[in-house]
Length: 362
Image 1 (tube, rainbow, N blue to C red):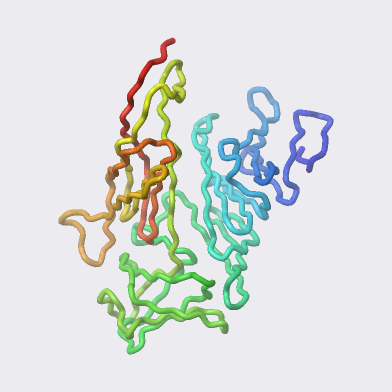
Image 2 (spheres, helix red, strand yellow):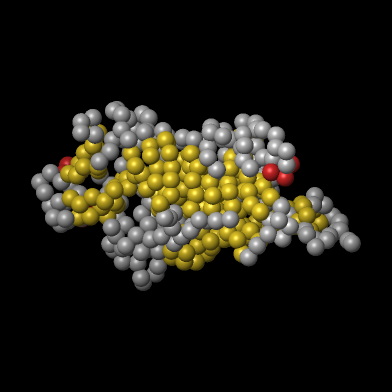
Protein backbone atom coordinates (compact mmCIF):
# COMPACT_ATOMS: atom_id res chain seq x y z
CA UNK A 1 0.00 0.00 0.00
CA UNK A 2 2.78 2.47 0.92
CA UNK A 3 5.36 2.67 -1.86
CA UNK A 4 7.84 5.49 -2.44
CA UNK A 5 6.60 7.71 -5.25
CA UNK A 6 5.27 4.94 -7.51
CA UNK A 7 1.95 4.84 -9.34
CA UNK A 8 -0.45 2.16 -8.17
CA UNK A 9 -3.09 0.53 -10.31
CA UNK A 10 -5.62 1.28 -7.60
CA UNK A 11 -5.97 5.07 -7.06
CA UNK A 12 -7.48 4.48 -3.63
CA UNK A 13 -4.17 3.20 -2.29
CA UNK A 14 -1.83 5.60 -4.09
CA UNK A 15 0.12 7.68 -1.58
CA UNK A 16 3.61 9.13 -1.46
CA UNK A 17 5.80 8.88 1.61
CA UNK A 18 9.36 9.52 2.73
CA UNK A 19 11.02 6.12 2.30
CA UNK A 20 13.94 7.08 4.59
CA UNK A 21 11.64 6.78 7.65
CA UNK A 22 9.50 3.71 8.30
CA UNK A 23 5.75 4.21 8.88
CA UNK A 24 4.48 3.86 12.45
CA UNK A 25 1.40 1.82 13.39
CA UNK A 26 -0.65 3.13 16.33
CA UNK A 27 -3.91 1.33 17.06
CA UNK A 28 -6.03 1.29 13.89
CA UNK A 29 -3.88 3.95 12.18
CA UNK A 30 -0.62 4.04 10.23
CA UNK A 31 1.32 7.31 10.20
CA UNK A 32 3.85 8.12 7.47
CA UNK A 33 5.72 11.32 6.47
CA UNK A 34 5.91 12.88 3.03
CA UNK A 35 7.84 15.82 1.56
CA UNK A 36 6.13 19.19 1.04
CA UNK A 37 8.73 21.48 -0.50
CA UNK A 38 11.19 22.40 2.24
CA UNK A 39 8.91 20.97 4.98
CA UNK A 40 7.50 17.60 6.00
CA UNK A 41 3.86 16.56 6.18
CA UNK A 42 2.38 13.53 7.94
CA UNK A 43 -0.63 11.46 6.91
CA UNK A 44 -2.90 9.27 9.03
CA UNK A 45 -3.80 6.12 7.08
CA UNK A 46 -6.78 3.97 8.04
CA UNK A 47 -9.81 2.13 6.69
CA UNK A 48 -13.11 3.98 6.94
CA UNK A 49 -15.38 1.67 8.96
CA UNK A 50 -18.52 3.06 7.33
CA UNK A 51 -17.55 2.96 3.64
CA UNK A 52 -14.72 0.36 3.74
CA UNK A 53 -12.53 2.82 1.80
CA UNK A 54 -8.90 3.64 2.54
CA UNK A 55 -8.38 7.16 3.97
CA UNK A 56 -5.10 9.05 4.37
CA UNK A 57 -5.95 12.28 6.14
CA UNK A 58 -3.16 14.81 6.62
CA UNK A 59 -2.52 15.67 10.27
CA UNK A 60 -0.18 18.59 9.45
CA UNK A 61 -2.65 20.54 7.29
CA UNK A 62 -3.14 23.18 10.02
CA UNK A 63 0.67 23.54 10.49
CA UNK A 64 2.04 23.03 6.94
CA UNK A 65 5.35 24.78 7.67
CA UNK A 66 6.10 23.46 11.15
CA UNK A 67 7.93 20.14 10.69
CA UNK A 68 11.15 20.57 8.64
CA UNK A 69 12.65 18.19 6.12
CA UNK A 70 15.35 15.68 7.01
CA UNK A 71 13.38 13.53 9.45
CA UNK A 72 15.75 10.87 10.80
CA UNK A 73 13.45 8.89 13.11
CA UNK A 74 9.75 8.51 13.94
CA UNK A 75 8.02 6.58 16.71
CA UNK A 76 4.74 6.55 18.63
CA UNK A 77 2.89 5.42 21.75
CA UNK A 78 -0.67 4.14 21.51
CA UNK A 79 -1.08 4.21 25.30
CA UNK A 80 -0.37 7.97 25.45
CA UNK A 81 -1.77 8.70 21.95
CA UNK A 82 1.44 10.40 20.86
CA UNK A 83 3.54 10.49 17.70
CA UNK A 84 7.14 11.74 17.81
CA UNK A 85 9.46 12.78 14.94
CA UNK A 86 12.97 14.22 14.98
CA UNK A 87 15.18 15.99 12.46
CA UNK A 88 18.28 15.44 14.61
CA UNK A 89 17.92 18.67 16.59
CA UNK A 90 14.28 19.04 17.65
CA UNK A 91 11.67 16.45 18.60
CA UNK A 92 8.19 17.19 17.20
CA UNK A 93 5.29 15.78 19.21
CA UNK A 94 1.82 15.14 17.78
CA UNK A 95 -0.84 14.65 20.47
CA UNK A 96 -4.27 13.39 19.49
CA UNK A 97 -7.42 12.22 21.25
CA UNK A 98 -10.55 10.52 19.93
CA UNK A 99 -14.00 10.70 21.49
CA UNK A 100 -15.84 7.92 19.74
CA UNK A 101 -15.17 8.38 16.03
CA UNK A 102 -14.47 12.10 16.40
CA UNK A 103 -10.96 13.47 16.85
CA UNK A 104 -11.31 16.24 19.43
CA UNK A 105 -7.59 16.99 19.88
CA UNK A 106 -4.93 17.36 17.18
CA UNK A 107 -1.97 19.42 18.43
CA UNK A 108 1.71 19.83 17.56
CA UNK A 109 4.55 20.94 19.81
CA UNK A 110 8.29 20.46 19.97
CA UNK A 111 11.24 19.94 22.30
CA UNK A 112 14.62 21.45 21.39
CA UNK A 113 17.40 19.17 22.62
CA UNK A 114 20.55 21.06 23.65
CA UNK A 115 23.53 20.05 21.51
CA UNK A 116 21.45 18.34 18.81
CA UNK A 117 22.98 15.20 17.38
CA UNK A 118 19.89 13.00 17.86
CA UNK A 119 20.47 9.61 16.22
CA UNK A 120 17.20 7.88 17.06
CA UNK A 121 14.10 7.91 19.26
CA UNK A 122 11.80 5.17 20.54
CA UNK A 123 8.97 4.68 23.06
CA UNK A 124 9.07 2.18 25.90
CA UNK A 125 5.64 2.32 27.54
CA UNK A 126 5.11 6.06 28.21
CA UNK A 127 8.78 7.08 28.16
CA UNK A 128 10.50 8.42 25.05
CA UNK A 129 14.13 7.31 24.87
CA UNK A 130 16.58 9.44 22.88
CA UNK A 131 20.02 8.43 21.61
CA UNK A 132 22.12 11.59 21.32
CA UNK A 133 25.70 12.35 20.25
CA UNK A 134 25.80 16.08 21.10
CA UNK A 135 28.07 18.54 19.34
CA UNK A 136 30.05 21.29 21.04
CA UNK A 137 31.40 19.25 23.96
CA UNK A 138 35.12 19.18 24.66
CA UNK A 139 35.23 15.41 23.92
CA UNK A 140 32.97 12.94 22.04
CA UNK A 141 30.17 11.48 24.14
CA UNK A 142 26.93 9.55 23.71
CA UNK A 143 23.83 10.10 25.86
CA UNK A 144 20.77 7.95 26.42
CA UNK A 145 18.03 10.35 27.51
CA UNK A 146 14.59 9.50 28.89
CA UNK A 147 11.69 11.91 28.37
CA UNK A 148 8.65 10.89 30.50
CA UNK A 149 5.45 11.70 28.58
CA UNK A 150 2.98 10.02 30.90
CA UNK A 151 -0.17 12.05 31.42
CA UNK A 152 -0.03 13.85 34.78
CA UNK A 153 3.35 12.33 35.64
CA UNK A 154 4.74 13.69 38.91
CA UNK A 155 7.90 13.21 40.96
CA UNK A 156 7.71 11.82 44.47
CA UNK A 157 7.49 15.40 45.79
CA UNK A 158 4.11 15.86 44.05
CA UNK A 159 5.43 18.16 41.31
CA UNK A 160 8.11 18.10 38.63
CA UNK A 161 11.44 19.93 38.68
CA UNK A 162 11.99 20.74 35.01
CA UNK A 163 15.65 20.48 33.99
CA UNK A 164 17.23 19.00 30.87
CA UNK A 165 19.50 15.98 31.41
CA UNK A 166 18.34 15.91 35.01
CA UNK A 167 20.12 13.54 37.38
CA UNK A 168 19.69 12.71 41.07
CA UNK A 169 22.70 13.59 43.19
CA UNK A 170 23.46 13.04 46.89
CA UNK A 171 26.32 14.98 48.51
CA UNK A 172 27.71 15.97 51.91
CA UNK A 173 26.85 19.63 52.55
CA UNK A 174 28.78 19.59 55.85
CA UNK A 175 32.11 18.64 54.25
CA UNK A 176 35.01 21.10 54.37
CA UNK A 177 34.91 21.20 50.55
CA UNK A 178 31.38 20.21 49.50
CA UNK A 179 31.42 18.80 45.96
CA UNK A 180 29.65 16.34 43.66
CA UNK A 181 29.93 15.04 40.09
CA UNK A 182 27.51 14.99 37.15
CA UNK A 183 28.07 12.11 34.74
CA UNK A 184 28.21 14.12 31.51
CA UNK A 185 30.08 17.09 30.09
CA UNK A 186 28.59 20.45 29.18
CA UNK A 187 28.63 21.87 25.68
CA UNK A 188 29.77 25.43 25.01
CA UNK A 189 27.34 27.94 26.53
CA UNK A 190 25.53 25.40 28.73
CA UNK A 191 25.10 25.92 32.47
CA UNK A 192 23.98 23.79 35.39
CA UNK A 193 21.37 24.40 38.05
CA UNK A 194 20.91 22.47 41.29
CA UNK A 195 17.63 22.27 43.25
CA UNK A 196 16.93 20.60 46.56
CA UNK A 197 14.04 18.14 46.63
CA UNK A 198 11.88 20.80 48.31
CA UNK A 199 12.41 23.28 45.45
CA UNK A 200 15.27 25.50 46.72
CA UNK A 201 17.66 26.74 44.01
CA UNK A 202 21.32 26.68 45.11
CA UNK A 203 22.66 30.03 43.94
CA UNK A 204 26.43 29.74 44.34
CA UNK A 205 27.50 26.60 42.47
CA UNK A 206 30.59 26.44 40.24
CA UNK A 207 31.22 23.72 37.67
CA UNK A 208 34.00 22.55 35.36
CA UNK A 209 34.01 19.69 32.85
CA UNK A 210 36.70 17.03 32.74
CA UNK A 211 37.57 15.32 29.47
CA UNK A 212 38.56 12.17 31.33
CA UNK A 213 36.49 10.32 32.52
CA UNK A 214 33.85 12.62 30.96
CA UNK A 215 32.23 14.18 34.03
CA UNK A 216 31.39 17.65 35.33
CA UNK A 217 32.58 18.51 38.85
CA UNK A 218 30.43 20.92 40.84
CA UNK A 219 31.75 22.96 43.77
CA UNK A 220 30.49 25.92 45.79
CA UNK A 221 31.83 29.44 46.00
CA UNK A 222 33.90 29.86 49.17
CA UNK A 223 32.88 26.24 49.98
CA UNK A 224 29.58 27.51 51.40
CA UNK A 225 26.30 25.84 50.39
CA UNK A 226 23.65 28.54 49.93
CA UNK A 227 20.21 28.59 51.49
CA UNK A 228 21.37 27.22 54.82
CA UNK A 229 21.38 23.67 53.43
CA UNK A 230 23.11 21.24 55.81
CA UNK A 231 23.40 17.49 56.21
CA UNK A 232 25.62 14.56 55.30
CA UNK A 233 23.28 13.22 52.58
CA UNK A 234 21.52 16.11 50.83
CA UNK A 235 19.52 15.05 47.76
CA UNK A 236 19.51 17.29 44.71
CA UNK A 237 18.07 17.50 41.22
CA UNK A 238 20.82 18.74 38.89
CA UNK A 239 20.47 19.58 35.21
CA UNK A 240 20.53 22.16 32.43
CA UNK A 241 17.90 24.94 32.63
CA UNK A 242 15.65 25.70 29.68
CA UNK A 243 12.74 28.02 28.83
CA UNK A 244 9.19 26.77 28.32
CA UNK A 245 7.33 29.01 25.84
CA UNK A 246 3.79 29.14 24.46
CA UNK A 247 2.72 31.70 21.83
CA UNK A 248 -0.96 32.52 21.30
CA UNK A 249 -2.48 32.62 17.84
CA UNK A 250 -3.68 36.04 16.71
CA UNK A 251 -7.07 36.80 18.25
CA UNK A 252 -9.92 37.26 15.72
CA UNK A 253 -13.42 38.66 16.10
CA UNK A 254 -16.03 36.30 14.62
CA UNK A 255 -19.76 36.84 14.07
CA UNK A 256 -22.47 34.27 13.60
CA UNK A 257 -24.20 34.95 10.30
CA UNK A 258 -24.69 31.17 10.03
CA UNK A 259 -24.27 28.21 12.36
CA UNK A 260 -20.50 28.66 12.10
CA UNK A 261 -19.11 32.09 13.06
CA UNK A 262 -16.60 33.57 10.62
CA UNK A 263 -14.06 36.43 10.91
CA UNK A 264 -15.25 39.91 10.02
CA UNK A 265 -13.65 43.31 9.44
CA UNK A 266 -16.89 45.23 9.94
CA UNK A 267 -15.83 46.32 13.42
CA UNK A 268 -12.70 47.30 15.29
CA UNK A 269 -11.39 44.99 18.00
CA UNK A 270 -9.14 45.98 20.90
CA UNK A 271 -8.03 43.42 23.49
CA UNK A 272 -8.44 44.76 27.00
CA UNK A 273 -6.91 41.94 29.06
CA UNK A 274 -6.41 38.21 29.20
CA UNK A 275 -6.88 35.55 31.87
CA UNK A 276 -4.93 32.33 32.34
CA UNK A 277 -6.30 29.37 34.29
CA UNK A 278 -3.76 27.00 35.84
CA UNK A 279 -3.29 24.23 38.40
CA UNK A 280 -0.35 23.36 40.70
CA UNK A 281 1.76 26.21 39.31
CA UNK A 282 4.62 28.11 40.91
CA UNK A 283 5.81 30.59 38.28
CA UNK A 284 5.32 31.94 34.76
CA UNK A 285 5.66 35.21 32.88
CA UNK A 286 3.37 36.73 30.24
CA UNK A 287 4.96 38.93 27.56
CA UNK A 288 2.86 41.21 25.34
CA UNK A 289 4.60 42.75 22.31
CA UNK A 290 2.34 45.08 20.29
CA UNK A 291 3.27 45.87 16.70
CA UNK A 292 6.23 48.32 16.58
CA UNK A 293 6.11 48.85 20.36
CA UNK A 294 8.03 47.69 23.40
CA UNK A 295 7.30 44.46 25.26
CA UNK A 296 5.41 44.59 28.56
CA UNK A 297 5.70 41.79 31.13
CA UNK A 298 3.37 40.43 33.81
CA UNK A 299 4.81 37.88 36.21
CA UNK A 300 3.07 35.33 38.41
CA UNK A 301 4.72 33.83 41.49
CA UNK A 302 2.73 31.54 43.77
CA UNK A 303 2.42 32.65 47.38
CA UNK A 304 -0.38 31.11 49.36
CA UNK A 305 -1.22 33.47 52.23
CA UNK A 306 -0.77 31.85 55.68
CA UNK A 307 0.15 28.56 53.99
CA UNK A 308 3.53 29.09 52.30
CA UNK A 309 6.37 27.93 54.56
CA UNK A 310 10.14 28.06 54.24
CA UNK A 311 11.61 24.93 52.72
CA UNK A 312 8.59 24.06 50.58
CA UNK A 313 7.58 24.72 46.98
CA UNK A 314 4.42 26.89 46.93
CA UNK A 315 1.92 25.71 44.32
CA UNK A 316 -1.30 27.48 43.44
CA UNK A 317 -4.38 26.61 41.37
CA UNK A 318 -6.19 29.74 40.30
CA UNK A 319 -6.40 32.29 37.48
CA UNK A 320 -4.11 35.17 36.53
CA UNK A 321 -5.23 38.33 34.72
CA UNK A 322 -2.77 40.36 32.65
CA UNK A 323 -3.24 43.64 30.71
CA UNK A 324 -3.02 43.85 26.92
CA UNK A 325 -4.75 47.10 25.78
CA UNK A 326 -3.85 46.93 22.10
CA UNK A 327 -5.03 45.91 18.65
CA UNK A 328 -4.55 42.14 18.16
CA UNK A 329 -3.12 42.62 14.64
CA UNK A 330 0.64 42.19 14.82
CA UNK A 331 0.58 41.66 18.60
CA UNK A 332 2.56 38.71 19.96
CA UNK A 333 1.47 37.28 23.32
CA UNK A 334 3.69 34.58 24.86
CA UNK A 335 3.84 32.67 28.13
CA UNK A 336 7.35 31.82 29.36
CA UNK A 337 8.83 29.94 32.29
CA UNK A 338 12.64 29.97 32.48
CA UNK A 339 12.72 28.39 35.94
CA UNK A 340 12.50 24.72 36.86
CA UNK A 341 9.34 25.38 38.88
CA UNK A 342 6.13 23.69 37.66
CA UNK A 343 3.74 25.47 35.29
CA UNK A 344 0.53 23.65 34.32
CA UNK A 345 -1.70 25.80 32.11
CA UNK A 346 -5.30 24.74 31.53
CA UNK A 347 -7.02 27.39 29.42
CA UNK A 348 -7.14 31.09 28.58
CA UNK A 349 -9.69 33.75 27.70
CA UNK A 350 -9.54 37.35 26.47
CA UNK A 351 -11.76 40.35 27.18
CA UNK A 352 -12.09 42.73 24.23
CA UNK A 353 -13.72 45.98 23.12
CA UNK A 354 -15.73 45.62 19.89
CA UNK A 355 -17.13 48.55 17.90
CA UNK A 356 -19.24 47.40 14.94
CA UNK A 357 -20.16 49.75 12.11
CA UNK A 358 -22.60 47.20 10.69
CA UNK A 359 -24.01 43.74 11.39
CA UNK A 360 -24.61 40.60 9.39
CA UNK A 361 -28.09 39.17 8.93
CA UNK A 362 -29.36 35.91 7.40
